[in-house]
Amino acid sequence: MAQMTPIQAQSLPQILQGRDVIAQAKTGSGKTAAFGLGVLHQLNGKRFRVQSLILCPTRELADQVAKELRRLARMSDNTKILALTGGLPFGAQLDSLRHGVHVVVATPGRVLKHLQKGSLKLNELKSLVLDEADRMLDMGFIEEIEEVISYAPKQRQTLLFSATYPTEIEQLSDAVQSNALQVETHSSEVANPIEEQFYEAQPQQERTALLQILAHYRPEHAMVFTNTKLEAKELAKTLLKQGVDALAIHGDLDQIERTDVLVQFANQSCSILVATDVAARGLDIKSLEMVINYGLPQDDATYTHRIGRTGRAGERGVAVTLISGRETLAAEAYQNGVRSFELVSRLPAVEQFSLQAKNRTLVIGGGKKDKVRPGDLLGALTGDAGIDGKAVGKIDLYDRQSYVAVARNQAEKARDRLKRGKIKGRKFTVGLLR
Image 1 (cartoon, rainbow, N blue to C red):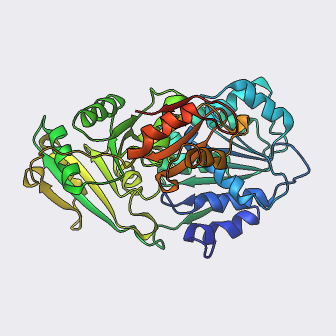
Image 2: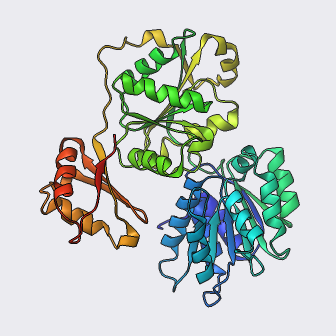
Image 3: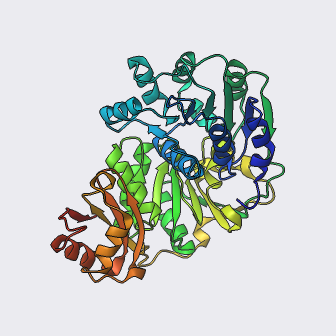
């Protein structure tokens, strides 16, 4: 890390001193490293007991935080970091806990089950982190959070990170922290270069209007936010029928379905991800060039969360909000002299428009527990399968399966040849998503 971000510079020294901190910083500000370095610094590596608990609102965010902590802990000797989330086998998590861990990154519901069953003990806990606390409150986790905290020692460090600072967050801080230092870095952070555009469509014409917007901007990688699960499902189906590579993520998907969707979007096998706010929270999607609000968000904080996913790392981003005529009056509250408001009818009509992702994803029935490594998959594809190495993209390994992005024009060839061949001298099932 060449230079600390504002949130890291202001909060990390205080965290290292053991102070309770409540920090407000926008998405992508480097907050995980800020609390992660503090958490890792105070661990006693020789004590294989849970010394730090990090609560996250979603499975995806918990996995993301655990990965980042493992990266930060690479130079430490044998630091054990475990993600405890729902949707995964309980027994495997029990085995990991029996072997001893230093840091647990978890969703509130799953960690509470382990506490209630006695498979998780917090008697040696030194630090508790509430990551994206505002979203956990929005999702109704307050009672579970309070019960989890009841199992923790009163003498501990508590760190609270939130993108927004509503009254409920202040009340939560008062209840679980002691003399907390408040850190707010929005004013010192460089604003994301985001073009904010509002388009008005006629009622019942929103889907056609969305296609006009996509045809006009032609994003390679964009997220469309809806306000309901049903909208997300139906909108993704509509886009697919119109030749747009789209997938939906929402609360009704099981863990395998969620993983399939997220992997495809992250490895550019899907151009458009249609998502609800709850399902999208915590997703680690880099280089997102565009965000579209399909209808007005429920409030300003949600709007800020959504558009903060584009325009990161100095790259220019586009945030489009599509409103229908009946939302025009409510949309006036968003006028600030910078945001542009236009009629979508001014955009060209859609004619034979399609938006296709550059890759497709192979799914292979072997993973980490089968001793499969990225190099094994790359070798099998570029060796006997005869696939150009430049055509092989991101490789994601899970316990019992692996995903490989392959250029669309070589994906079927890669699947067929891998089916006939071997990986590490063994036969594995090979499929092609969508």
